[in-house]
Image (cartoon, helix red, strand yellow):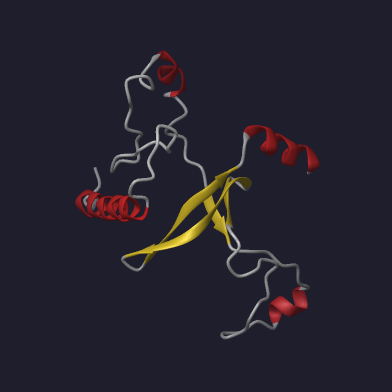
Length: 139
């Protein structure tokens, strides 16, 4: 067991409070699932059915979640000239939603939030499974 669990609990509580304040009065039955401090979903009566037992084996598989600000393509000679203070222009515009990727695959888009000097992302759009399949077939 990790020694920083109380710290993780405090951070999780701060994020929960910030998100609650940001979305006060907007929660619906279709809202995203809630997670406890151990990052496990809090189950409702309907979600605790037999189908949840079928996926228990994959819930602990680690994946890489990344948020992409933008991209650019540059020659290696430009990379070798980069120094502290250099500016790299990206293809994204200011204010555009950022891409949320899991293992390199786009799953959502969102906007940056800051809570206690830490960055997070509030998901604004989830990519549907059919759209993900279309994107996969294009590559």
